Image 1 (tube, rainbow, N blue to C red):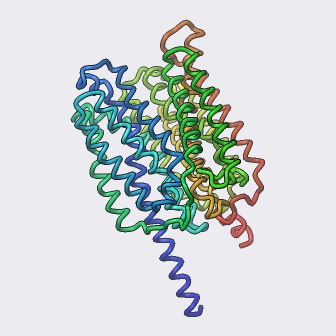
Image 2 (cartoon, helix red, strand yellow):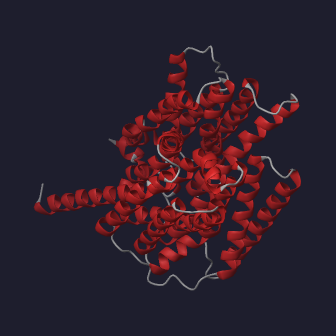
Length: 481
């Protein structure tokens, strides 16, 4: 081996380490953001008592956070290009952290809602801009590992959050659910300043104000409709009105982006098959099914099995361990079988494991429940990592910012859509029985419907070429060797 070859390999190894470090730094911030979104719900009754309001009134804090985030997500890519991804990412962490501090010290519901809105604005920029940073620092051969690192917060935080939130609320106070963000945020900002290089587009163009207004309003109305449908409040008319408004505004935004020279969001990424399938069509349906599971499982164990929240949490920890267990084999499996095979076969495993959860009962042997939850966790982790990696396998540098923003928008929709579909099936099944609360039979229907969506979406990936994303997974290279 020549000196030049040795030097080149050394540079590649150093670049690979840098990409991993950057991905880990971004993952720390993602974990704080997603943990906050799941941990707060456990302390709403205690917060209501502290603010002297009814517990149902506290849901506005969650709704405002979500809607503010939806409104600012479309702006994230342009801001990253205009002011530099590192600077915007650092600012988003700072805004989120400071808002968390003020949420903890809020003395009234109005004050709390104000700071939750600020938190939502910081959160809106964090995910898409953080992903842009990772994409710019990782070569295609390093993309699977980098995306896997920034995907684990989305897999683990929703499982850890409710358990941790319940523990904190029980043994400390609800304030610590927000104060826990302060050290994480400070550490995250320090890591960004130390390890994340500044990268900035030379000419991002002027802000497409009309595009921002239309896309922000469209996404906000869509998510508001889904959120309202989950809560089953206000009747069907407001949900349908918001859904219609969201669809119309999203259509107008799409038409606008296709017509102008310098759109806020470049929709050409949807002409790339791997991006379109993994984010918009089959990807959205697949995420919808998988995202419904963390919502359904705690309810199944508490309402269907009659277990305490702590006992239900113990089952969820097994699910969480399954999520972690797949990380070490994700890259080898993608290299061995390729994206298409993994997304189809692993997707079917994930879908049937979801469906099987509907047939669990208090009499099911505990070992079988643990094994099923572990498999469901394993397949969930693999599917999300494969989807998130394939999304950017064929995206060019000029499309990264818009593609990351579009991906974040669609993932927000799929997250709420999964909960909305599951909640709708539970409510319809309960209503048909003339009951107010779901029982074991209602959960069976919910898991069956969600599992069927997962099966259908997994089979859609058969339309991908066998070599799809091979430059990222190394699939063709493995076969040649």
